[in-house]
Image (cartoon, rainbow, N blue to C red; front, side):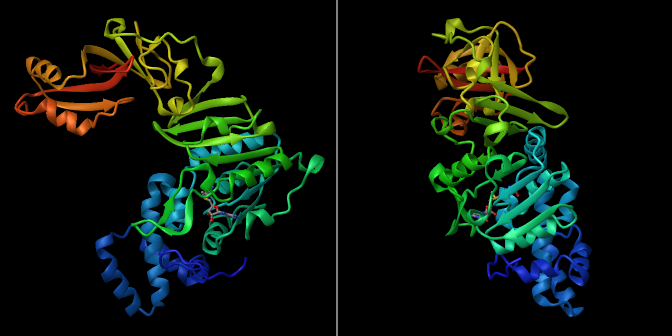
Length: 416
Ligand SMILES: C[S@@+](CC[C@H](N)C(=O)[O-])C[C@H]1O[C@@H](n2cnc3c(N)ncnc32)[C@H](O)[C@@H]1O
């Protein structure tokens, strides 16, 4: 691994390496779940015990990152190293496993992970039995990935620009895959929190979208993880773009090429713990039958998961869409489809605060949760306005604010 001078927070390459073995590793592992308010006293004590001050600072920074990483990585966080940006950009292990499944399913035995970050996807590829050539241009990140992949046989980690990786072509590429998870942060440009600034535009990712497409042209089994804001029009012909949500939050849009494509075009995968992913494709779209007024509303409101909305697949909703593309439909019955939620409609009103407030008062409702889609309304402001003077009322209600034929409506609903 190339030595480098890059630092993130208090960590540099030499310190990362000293945290992976011997007394540095023992020091880090001894910190466990320390609390932030103990950091100063702990740091003073460890220095007084003779530990190198730089190592103490780096170990404390890692312990803090491990605590933050537990939400994403569970108990594995306590065995991994992180950088702040690397943790934020790392793929959730549950989704990394899904990426690995695609490569395995296509008969791939070696994946070039071109911009491997701290190695979350690379760990999943290795755990699925594939060899991994993991590469990152940032020396500290590559050192962290090397630490995180050290016990994975068949894995190498190199620090170099991904563009310099020699990839096979033609028949030689048959069992080889390329994985790109371009950085959505611009290095060198810092946001107010001191972290690299986030970018969402396809033009501002690194490695570039053009570079990713060149890799896909050379190595057919290529996958690229992109922002959920991926523009539909940019999808290359024959490829699949899959928007994926985890616990109802849309985390990624992955473009798959060649043998990794399961269904060409736009697809959505709705993932949650304990159940198989629900996949929706363009083949599920039904002829549009939009609602024209409040009179068309049935007794149930169906709400599509946001991955379906991002993928432009709300036309797959049963019933009739309230407004095309927003992700709400009305129907005569609740649905058991795993990618939507059903709400019983208790009341439907025009979006007029006075009308809503009067309904709330007559139903003794003083506490309201406002959900909105497809409306410019500020939900918190509306909540305050419609509940003004009703605080003493015990009742609670959920108010859905959206539009029908361009006109604002408010629905009082109950989760089905
Ligand atoms: C989004 S992160 C990858 C996260 C990774 N998939 C994971 O799950 O941990 C993107 C990484 O690409 C690296 N990168 C950006 N441009 C690169 C380039 N031209 N060559 C190699 N690495 C690059 C960045 O340093 C960053 O660590």
